[in-house]
Length: 267
Image (cartoon, rainbow, N blue to C red):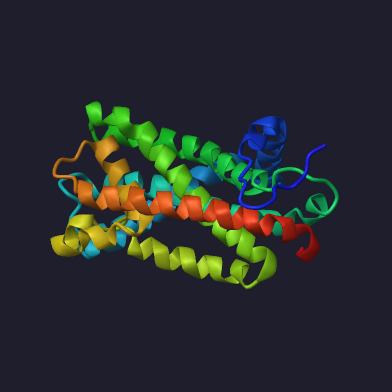
């Protein structure tokens, strides 16, 4: 017999006990996402690729935005990889509880499984888009450095960032359905606040630690460093992002578990 947690007990071990359910929800999300689409999983490549083309034309060629010495297409695509994963994960997981209201009102299971499975499904799209990035590295003759060994850590940071934001938004969305209407605007605004179309070096040095409070700033800069081996990385910015992600994640877990007991009644 499984019962919802009481008090501030997070009961994270339940996620391991329900790993088969998480696998099922992840697989179901993937099937639903590409069901009856003509291009299927190719959409996972088209979205960041076409965005990269638009950024290259307007920011790289017309606005002449600097790209820290690497070709602008691969400079922007290295940032779009984690960004597309983050934006899709937040959008899908924020609505995951509301979209599965029928399941939530019938049986008990760790509600954390809902936003978590949406994020894990996004990793499949990320892997597909990453293959295109490897092809671009070969085309531009960019060889990875030892920094590539740190890539799993920055992928983990991207997952943690997506999960932290999703915990807050998915729980709030159960009570206030306005959230689903604000997410498209939020992600568009966040896109331009993150150093995707431009390098973080454009931000005055004295403001970079504050700029790092945008957790995706550290994720994007970490990806660029790991994939392109750029020197002169601002580690203070990345450290600020890691700290804010930890704070958001712990706060999100506590808030989500506190609200969890009311989901079935409100939804």
